[in-house]
Amino acid sequence: QVQLVESGGGLVQAGGSLRLSCAASGRAFSSYAMGWFRQAPGKEREFVAVIMWSGRNTDYADSVKGRFTISRDNAKNTVYLQMNSLKPEDTAVYYCAADIQGGRGTPRRDYEYDYWGQGTQVTVSS
Image (cartoon, rainbow, N blue to C red):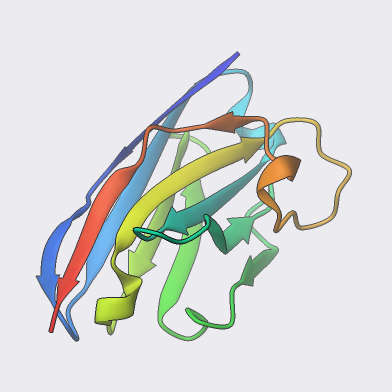
């Protein structure tokens, strides 16, 4: 069992920055991939970024590449999403997720993840 708790969301003006955190508890954090997804009102949940267990391999959605950075601190059981140059279209509830099973490369699909946090709201005003 893994518990995930996101924090760091809020209201920011376009062009601003936020850093989301996701604290994990339960099974060995350093052994599985972690992802960030988001869901805007009226839209499907979409992939944002993923980081593998070692932290060396990452992948991003094209819409956030160059603006967002995913990282992890295995000693603190925490994954981060640094979001810079935010745009109004980044407004969404952001979720972190854990891929416990593994063996799926760099997972980008929500069904490849086993555990989810409750989400944190990010609102970017124009």
